[in-house]
Amino acid sequence: MNTDGVVDVTILGAGPTGLAAAYYAGHRDASVRIIESLEQLGGQVAAVYPEKHVYDVAGHPKIQGQALVELCAEQGLQWGADVRLGEEVQALEHLSENGEQLLAISTNRGNRFLARSLIVTAGHGAFEPRKLGVDGIDEWEGKGLHYFVRQKEVFRDRTCVIVGGGDSALDWTLGLQDTVRPPIALVHRREKFRALESSVNEALALEAEGRVRIMTPCEVREIHGDGHIAAVTIEDVASKELTTVPCEALITLLGFHSHLGAIAEWGLELEGKRQIRVDAMTMETNLPRVFAAGDVAGYPGKITLITVGMGEAAIAANNAVAQVRGEKVQPKYSTD
Image (cartoon, rainbow, N blue to C red):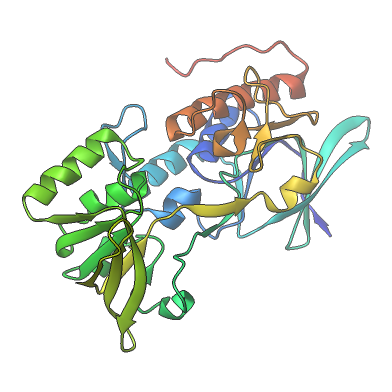
């Protein structure tokens, strides 16, 4: 195995939270390494919704996902962090070397990285989309079925059906208004949406203008087309009435199945099934010098917002640096 030099802080994950941790640790003059399983910076924001507007980041009334990633990278990498993309972590060892307690992180590329502390910012871990319960659904992938909206231009002047009742479904119903051929059909299996009230109200206003067709409580039952999706059959689950709707792009936004992968085998205590339990005061896990921040970190009352993750990243980095240096935890401010 290849072993690189020891750094003060290794960060697992290069999304906004990981980049925020890299910024704050670097600001404290700590050496930093970032390990990211994807081949790009930005984590789930860059991989899943780079063109979606994000509204919950402090200081930005709204900001496009990719623009946010670029700003986070500019800020987080300014201190010269060592970035390793396309590497999936596997094993974690605690070892002693020359009287120093270190953490050794092994990856699928045969590398072994040494660190004095570790901050896990892996988001929801490995994830795959939940799929519609329609026979032969996988056959339509690449033929008009989409689980993400990466580039809006792909949907230019297409008839579009969006399936889902959460924030992503409502956000893209609103966000694709300048791109697709109206009306967008929004299909949800319940009467009530789980999304922000303001988004639902805006969709209702667009429905009154004829730009959105809200279909609840409804489910997609069948997909039609010859080599590419051309229409879908939608059932009203209350009346059992069937309606065929033209559709060139079927976007299903039903959430994800996620798992922590190899991280779950490290002996970390979990909060539920998909989060690592942390002390909310320090963001430290049950393992010494191992911290977590962002969506992957769990504690009572947790809110999974990017803004919250950025704050947790600073807390984790602050405590990690203090432990590495054997000093009292204290904030270091970034103003001149």
